[in-house]
Length: 300
Image 1: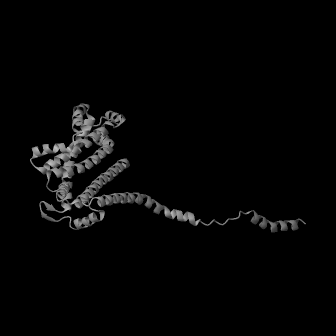
Image 2: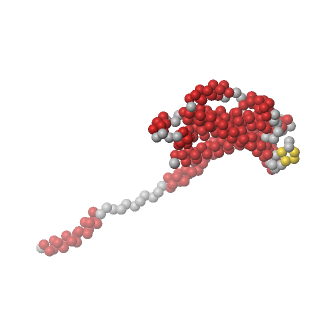
Image 3: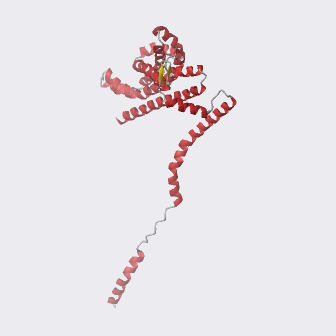
């Protein structure tokens, strides 16, 4: 009898085990709507980035067209675009010293900005370090900077003409004097805001002034220095256009004034766009440099 029961138990055991085993449920099919939504995310992001600027440009063109419709002397956007195609077909022609392509004029202005801006950096950044480091020098230069900083850079142009007897160095002098203040002030502020704990450690370790400058002050003040440089380059490019209108010669500012004398409004509008684009590129380049140097400083 027991043998019969054991055999029945052995026969029933596989069935019990099979019934007790968990059943594997089939995976639900992915919803096509969710997959489609994920596929549309890059497109939606691109639309959010591109659509607002396009709407802004369209609004400017609409206002421009309305102004041109009310004033026949003002060129329409289409007429200005056609003039730009002709202008950029040969931007580097040279017929005479006073008849050159717009490319040469932009390069001449950039050269003046580079020289004046470079001289301002060579003087302004070290002076900012000294002002931020030495209290006596800060008190000595504080009133001078406060007095001269609000003065318009163009007010210095006659002084440059009187001293240098030439328009080109006078324009560079104007760039120098307008670029130096942001560098001096921002560098000095950056040095003054170095944490005092850092300076205490340097004093305990008896570090030399050179090591304090290179290992503590410069890395800590670097973001302020780069901000001053970025502000200075925008001001320098702004001032050179006005300075060249007054001094003449080759340059984008002189080119704008010359086109006004010829009553060529289309070329003036094109020059305004070029000035804006070049200024934007200069600022973006310095911002990229600032990000790269800051990232390298953090990595080190």
